[in-house]
Amino acid sequence: MKKLINAISFLILINIIKLFSGCGPCDCNIAPGTFDFTQIKTENINNAGRWHSITESDTLKAAAVAFKISVSGNDTLLSAYHISSFGFSQACAFECYCPIPFKPNQLIEDISIKTIYDLSDDMPAGSDITNFFVGYTDNYSNTSDKLYLSIDEILNKINPDMLYDTQTVSFQVYLKKEITVQKAQFLFSITLSDGRVLSDTTSLITIE
Amino acid sequence: MVLKYRIKAKIKYVISFLFIIYATTFLVNAGDKTIKKYSFSAYYGLRNVKCDSFPNSNNLDFMNYLYVETEYPEFAEYDFIGFSAHLWFKNNWDVDIKLAMFDDFIPDNINISAQYFPFKFIGFNMAIYGYPQTMENFDYFHKINEPDYYTYADYRQRNVYELGLLAGPVLKFHYRILNVVMKLNFGINELFPFSEDIHQKQIDANYRRKLIYETNWSSAFFFFPETELEIDCFKISGKTFGVRMQSNWFTTKRSIDYTKTVFEWTEDNSSKQIVKNPKHQFSKFEYDFGVFLRL
Image 1 (cartoon, each protein chain N blue to C red):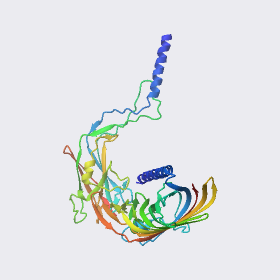
Image 2: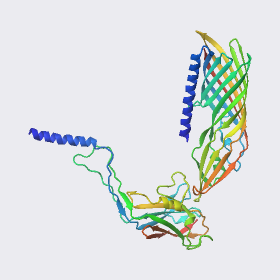
Image 3: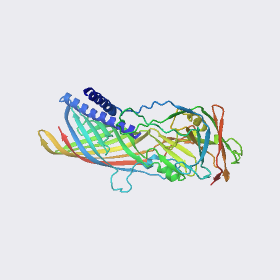
């Protein structure tokens, strides 16, 4: 009986120690998942004001034509799991949250933007107008009135070492020229390091 | 940048304070052989500033944005408290150290002078003189002149600092309980350079640009007469207590020139322009009242 009491006391003591010593930094030692880029999506940006915002509207200002391009994998986002421990749960004031790391199997090597309609003498239908765009990336975004990046600079910054809780890489592009026609539409093509090209066409834009 | 300025100012404070303590202690202890007498004083003062303001031209003129009280012009632009030490040496040299501070408690208003009196009443004064002043809302130039842009400045207010050397004749006389010192100073000072960024985005357009203003060292001659009056009130154990009043007038004509770099769209697309602005007539009038202890 005495041995049983000692054993139970010892187990309780161990769990009490674990209870209070468990509140440390989260041990997020999770192996990264890999994925292939398979999808591309374009969204319109309203950049008429000081700050840009994604818009459902297909009407953009003539000198404020801008888009957000997202390149992603097929799998849906996996939810994070909580660290569990044997015995009592940790007596912490927070839950341990470990973001799932993802590593893409491909690099984004090239961005190409073509106009579907005539926009001006130097932007005829079908021409590559990539050089008329500038933009931002996820890790260099317009949070403090920064100047833009050129497309080459976007390509240098766009490939992350690791993504967390997402399989999506996105960037924004802004047209430097003012469009003088009433309608515009663009074809975005992303060339990956495995030779595949992902393409998407924007909606038909009404120029205001 | 503000933090960097404040840290530098606090370092100046520590150095200045230690210098006063060391110099006074050293000389006093070295002392009976060196110093006849010395005094310490504390005072409160006001500073009125006047500066020409010119209409906006094509280029920003920072002198138009020096802080001048316009809503209540009868009020002084700055008030300050100050501490000073005056040492009378046996070989006809006097040293005067004055440090004053605004409500930020940074003693960056300095006046460290040495006077030599080959004659009883007339001598020669040399000094280092420095003071800060506030400049603010210079982004309004762009907001007024370029209404089709959103305009943002990293900082809309800053202190600009002038430091100079001066010299001139000094007159002093003593009559019973009155002590008067009058200095007629001429000097040259430098405005410390600074840099300001303005960010702009065109309304209803993607166009963005960044303007960087980098000012140059800017010299100007100044005229700076000073008058100080002390009245001995009472003595205790050989120490004299009294009141003091001081006033000075500072006038100069200066401009703030700069190099303007404009970045359009991206950081690698820039152009530079050197801008020389017209000179503004600038003056300030100070007066302060305080108490002193002479030993």
